[in-house]
Image (cartoon, rainbow, N blue to C red; front, side, top):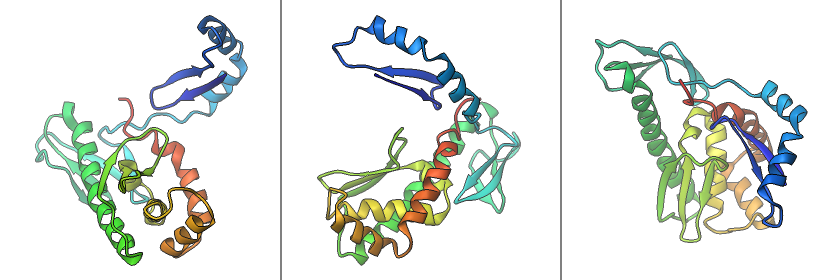
Length: 209
C-alpha cells in the first residue's frame, strides 16, 4: 500500500492492491497520522495567480500587476506581468499567457535541438501532467508541462534534450544517456538536480485562490 500527499489537489491519496479491502487500506492510512502531520508541515503553500503575487518566469521573479482599467491582454514588461480586465478571469488569462509562451518557446527549442541530431518529432504540445515534465510517445509526439516556462532556461533545455533523445531511444540505457548529454551540451546531472529543487514549487504555482 502507498500513501501520498497530492499538494496540487490538497488531498491524501492511498493506493492498494486489489486483494486488500478498501476499509483495511483506509484504516492503515488513518494509522499514519504522524507521517501525515510531517508532510503537512513540510508542504509549500499554494501560489495562486492574484494581484501582487510574485512568480518565476524563465527563472526570474516577476510581479503580477493588475488593474481593471488596463487591457485584458497579458504582457511581460521587465519584472512585471501586466494584465487588466475583470479580476474574476485574471488567473485564467495569466495561465493561458504562460501556456502560449511555453508552447512557443518549447516548440522552437525542440526544433533546434532535434535538427542538431537530424531528428524531427511528429508534434510538440504542452499540458499539465502531474508527474512528468515531458514525454515522448512511440509515435514521436513530444508533450511538455507548460510549467517548464517558469524554470531557468538550462532546466527547460535539459528536459527538451531528454525528450528529443527519446526520439531515437525510448529507454534510458547507455546510448540514450550519451545522446542526452550530447544534445544538452553541458552537465545533465546538475540540470537534473536543479529541476528536482524547482519541482515542489512549480507544482504549487497557479493553484488555489
